[in-house]
Length: 583
Image (cartoon, rainbow, N blue to C red; front, side, top):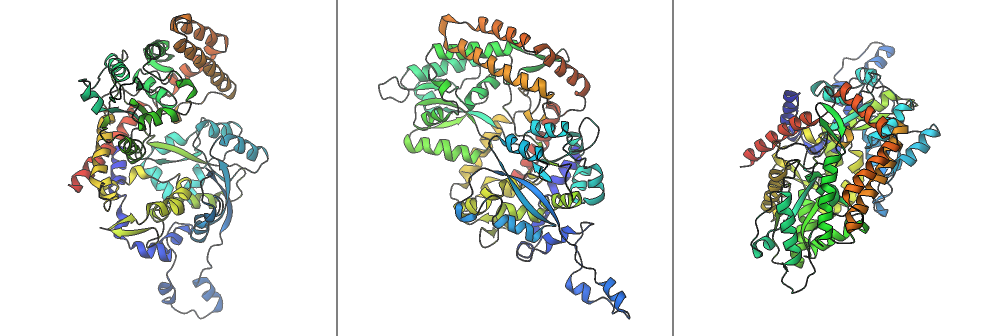
């Protein structure tokens, strides 16, 4: 697998040597992939050079009729963010472009991005599920599989695919992850470029002012946070700062520092619940709360918006964030902070070491399964050809960058966006969820480095340095991953146990929260006892037994930490090579 991925990475930008103008303006490269064998049909010159036939019948055979496009339905997330003058997510310039250039007549079906399972359930219950369903949530795809609503795609790929079949041959993990318990393949997937998903921004000017070191352990983290709270780091003579955030996304980031973001852990080669790490985290959170180091109303800040605003306003010393985009972190957190506090200086803080060790943060999912074919699909061959069309370099390029001269220009042999706002409105906002099979993890090159990607921006060197710092701080593969695997690769419980597990976890979370905010009235030790009792009374043992057996049966074939790290390691080598080429 390693060699195939490296090969794909090296070849991922070969399209740069092709005339981009011809591909976009004429559509020749795009329409050519709609043939049965995936090869381009005859050009006009080739057709006219054929020898004339002596019979009308032979003449008809020598000039094959163009293949008639078949009708298919395809889902697309509706995030409610398409500009009114651009149409709707089902009908816009790009749905029209796809139908003009692709191999099928596609009717798009909108699925609300928030709570998509409701619309999915309604569609499939009425027998009108989309022929090709794009859905990130494994539980929703697994539900459809359990209901026998999905079509196996092994034979379809073998018979009708060129591009996806080649992708699977080069990267066998796609077949491994897309195969269900009956041994058949049901899911399409893609390779993502992996960035850290979480981290900590810390005010280094506050550290310097208070003569503090960067914290490397959770105890040092506590002491720094306490100083940020009590020693007036902003110098306004008031006690109006907090040490760190634990609301919204920040909570899970802090849990990861303690290895307690997921309750399952491998001990003695068995998958078990780790009550010890969960207890350690909640004792720590309670200490922070009791010392006034965190906002006492953190529980009401469910989406973390107030904590983020506190950081931007210069009132929070450490912001525990969830964001995988270094540019976004810089532009939405650091830049606004410096606009409000000109002297502010920040950097990334690696996860401090807890009793359980020092961990990696959440990483992006390197291999993500994103699409399934409905059992009711009337033209599954057209669905497969549409998948092949989506993963064509030329299709991916157009849906990513738009039209040359309108949305981008060629700079040093690579597309550069002309107007970021126009591109966002007319291209990326609309096409993002049409590109759920785009293999960014296999095509990274020096042109994806911020220094070249934003080469016309005077801050491009700053962007590059910030991105390097982000990756160098958190892509430390000598540290363990805080969970068994990516959440999307965790096994899905049977429906009954899944509902029970979800509900009992909500109740247990409420128990832990009560302990954190109740002072001496309700201790973490009592919360642990109550949580364990609740777990036992609500089929907890059955859930534990199911997970234990799953691990026994699948530990050698599932995508676990070692597989994730191997892919990330390969991408880090690709990144280093790109940097070397840039230099």
